[in-house]
Length: 415
Image (cartoon, rainbow, N blue to C red; front, top):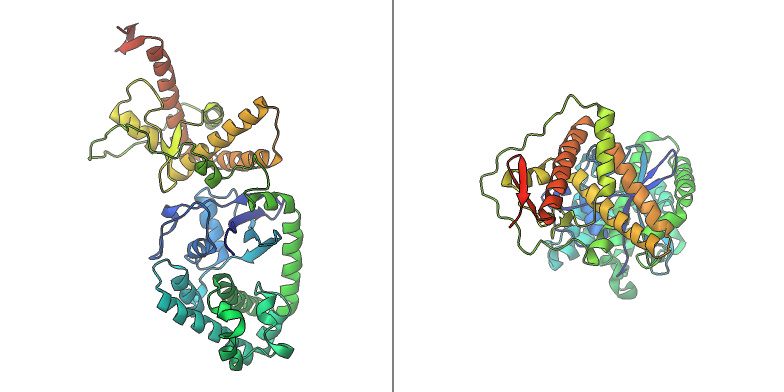
């Protein structure tokens, strides 16, 4: 499974539009790992989603933090398998602190030792086989293809007799790969969790599972080409996602000579500007964002977007430098930084007479997220204060570069 790029996807159930859910270390608020690599692993996505009790809670949190535009979405994991076939896994949450989910969390954690992994894998598989043996309906649910469990694994059981007597046999099948395949193990846990939910909600579990599968397939097929682009870094030379942009060396290095700030950090108070209407603020902010060059922000090693203190040639006061980082909340700052990178790439392609539908779609997704987020007055006030301060320094920097420096309210030629 090496090289597979997993993406956590939110697809709007009304219009079918697709958003990639970008994660960073600050989203990991459990005791498990908070270190992310550029290409998300399945384990990292699972560790994130398993922090939530159920999908509705997860969707609300994603919408409230501005990671998705609406909570009315189908949430799933999309990727291309080794044969480049578009494939989906369902999202795992931790309802009722289920033992199997807790075991999987331990297995997904990078701190889990090889010895512990071996023990946990055996426990997960045995528990799965035991449920198949004791619950014929669950066994039919698995055999009917309603889970994401590999067909190769199911083919090991002649006549569909999935039970604990086969446990020892699995150690010798194809090198015992089943005990080392994280996707297989997590999909066993996923099958158990989804089956339990269906059993609680519907009288006819298999009929409900079939209807759910058909509905999901229809929705996901409607965005098939977009999803293929999002899950294959090499499908389009102009495809730009959050991590591929970083890997090209754009804005990901800490500036060479950053401003040093004092250790004491006074609280940043966002001015309200009540005399300016909501619509006027929003237009001013969106116009400013559209004009931002790609090097206004940089991404630190943990993918936090920060204002680039070397962007302006003129001096920036310590208070203003803090405000240029603090006025924008973390999520809004990240979305805007990402948009500036996409926008720069878009204009570069235009200049060269090249058009990329993937890049265009990605830009539209991010822009939609930003505009949706700025409907919240708290986020808008912070963005408006940031845009005003930024534009003030744009004018001041222009005078500085023209050889004029400020002295209070008047300007003189710089010597």
